[in-house]
Length: 349
Ligand code: GA4
Image (cartoon, rainbow, N blue to C red; front, side, top):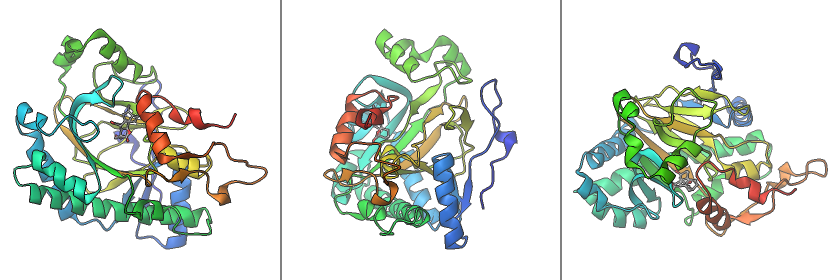
């Protein structure tokens, strides 16, 4: 069932429209479900799923590992960094000067890479890597279930053409755990960001747009779309996530620790030849509580060509994008700023 989230939970400002995003019940009948998934991807590039089959215990074990890690001292955490490309990161996002009010762990989902990384992250590396690998398997299962529904809803001939990209042993999928410490109004006023260099402050400001109800100092993670195919996100019970509608209005997403949120990424925008649009989103910090979120970024292998599915291209609807490999797209993404619309580089004029 597609139900709008309660408007009472929406922050109303001059330019924030009170409206909902879809919630999809995965226990519904399959043909109805695939229709709803496609509609949600088309209209919002974002939806919440309920009645999924991910065990609560898989979620809570990863959350416990995250809590344990982030409660370590800064010098202990730094031993697991820098996140270049994987490991612990604090405030720096990507290589081009973007900053946020957060710390994080960024991991490749390859089990060998997880096990190697866990040595510097956890006191009990085996327990940590088991929790991470179990979560990754569950998130991958949910992603594939959703991608199969997408393929069915789009009447794509090979129903597994999308999920097979993620199931591939060389898939370049990632797991990220973000922790946003509370940023008090007082420190907002005093501008915690005073510790930043002027060019870094400029970078923070560039990640905002004027269509918002916040100042420049409570950005946890600046506005962007995810480069991958699909993102599966969940968080603890602390708010902060906002998504942008296609017409540029921001909608707050009330947290729901037992459920997952699904985001269309840039690669799925290309695979559907622009029928789905990747969702722009951002995270604002909370003034009293720490938000912890975990994201599974579902990506194909590096050498995979990203090009519209044959079904999505006709003589009336030619391909909008030049073909590129996932490695080429990643390279482009890492050469640009967080908030840049990097797909523009690959558009056919
Ligand atoms: C956004 C989605 C994922 O968090 C991420 C991010 C990555 C990073 O933090 O290193 C990027 C960002 C993300 C998009 C553009 C580039 C790359 C920072 C950045 C400026 C891990 C990813 O894959 O792309």
